[in-house]
Amino acid sequence: MTRAEISQRVVGILVKTFELDPADIHPESRLYEDLDLDSIDAVDMFVELHEITGRRIDPEVARKIRTVDDIVGLVESELASAGAAS
Image (tube, rainbow, N blue to C red; front, top):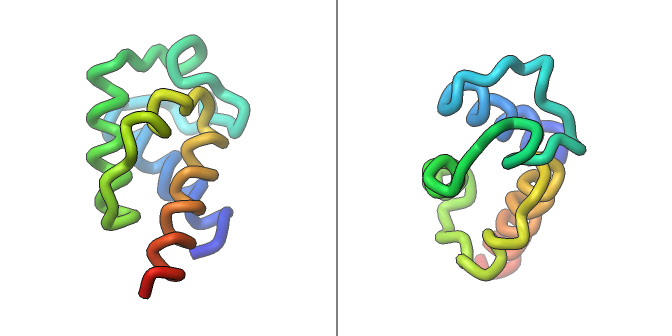
């Protein structure tokens, strides 16, 4: 999966799960400040990301996620790790 495809999937999750307008979602958008997500929303988002990666996101890593681009990078990294482990 390319970075653009990952980005598209992440935006899709944000739109579907949190009813956000896709026009408001940019790589630099901050999850909590710009998109008004809260900690419960973050948990829901990581459940959805598990569907993409097939891996549980490390809570220490999850705490460092701040922007949409951070999520894309995390998914990209998790997919690369899963591919290397196969």
